[in-house]
Image (cartoon, rainbow, N blue to C red; front, side, top):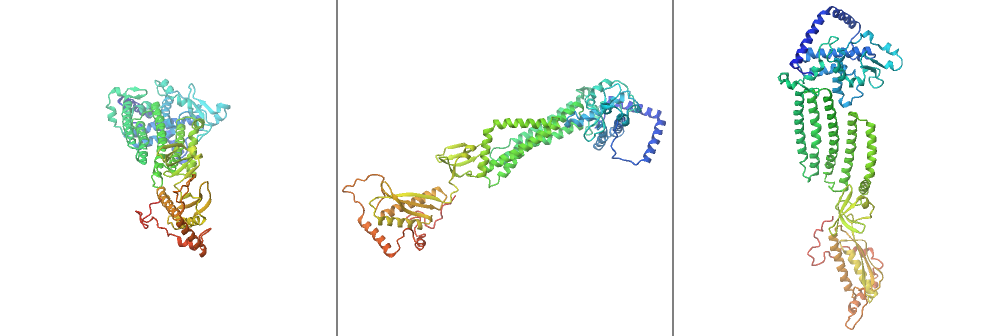
Length: 634
């Protein structure tokens, strides 16, 4: 891309054009003859626009390079310079592809090849146009190179120079002769040595390298460049001062855009994870969007060249791949929080943390892959980077062994799901409610309101009892009656207890039971075993209280009493068992026996069906009515 020249370069361009016109008039007969020959050749052979340039020998490569350079220079002089435009710039770039592809760029980082190749091609074109080159007949062709022995068949050096053409051994241009990688690197050195020499061949545009360096892009007014003070056209580090000033202004605008992105990234308030993740996504997005715009303007409009342009290309590549990796990492967080925003995923649950871990691992792997590709574009050895990542990953894994163990423990908790956030559980000998299960540890609030933090690895090894997932709650009590209790009194108590359990609307009749289970140290022991149909601990306590109070009433009605685990000293004031009630209980048992309805060892199905729901619950006098809505079961 070339812009309107300064007055000094414009003068050189005008003088060059005049000399070029004079040489053309002098050699007009020769040119006409060549034109006739070319016309005849075109008439004999059809045009092949897709035919690749011939670089099969040093002669063909040198001839192709100089001819393509002349074509680019002529286009700049006749078409682009008088009226620059984007279309003409694209045309000049297309013509320059043949010019650039004559170079071996294997020693140039891929990210810097575009600008480096263009600068080196123009520089070598200037150098070769000032050197006394041998005639094309003296440059070896393909047959002559094939006849050379060993390494000489793959390399030809222009006489009295260090400029070499070498044959590519691999890649898409294998077999082509290209200017060697060393020649490309030393192009500026060669140019400095021949700068003062006159041209040895007719060129459409003299001092093409200076012309390219001094001009700007098609969007910058040419009159504005020409109107700049002379000191702004002075060279510093190979670039005019005005280009450095333009680069400074461009970088200031770039910094302002990044500052805006930084301000947006700080808008999160910590209360909404998804909003916070989106805010943190702003900075890498701004960096990735602004960098190519700044680079394009610096390289295509300000048109920095040479080593400065190559450095900008390298820095831009590093920034863009870094921003891309950063965006992948932040996008993983956005994706995780978007999934967790679903009402079915509690914010602090193991599911939420596993989603965060999974997406962040994917983001980490994607970022690492993108950074590896970027490093390759910068010319760093990819295999060495991968090996370094492997060794570094091993070192990190050894140093982070406890963290990895806890991470695996958290994954095990997710896979088995013994407990979730908000559930009441027993862990070891402690009881508490799970408040959070994270990447490294879980937080459990004990019944005494103390908060315990347990590493996931330790929690995964503990026996965990989940109380919240019970569908029923158990009453398992032993009732001890005094040894003075008669067998019929005991039978009465057992029957009434069973009637109460079968008739209670909040007791599951199967397998509700009341059984005489043994002779205790100071009591006749009855086991009361029943499931209460509730999951709520508070409601369970109320139901169990009601059942135990009814047990006391039944024991009192039988004429006996609850035994105490102690020795009893009977004095004259001790009333002993109630004889009247004892007789009533024994009479009731005799009646059951005579009627054949003695419910031992179990109630008959008819008796059990008749007793179902016969107990008033809540009991008479309770503030709740029997048809009141039962408390919510969690």
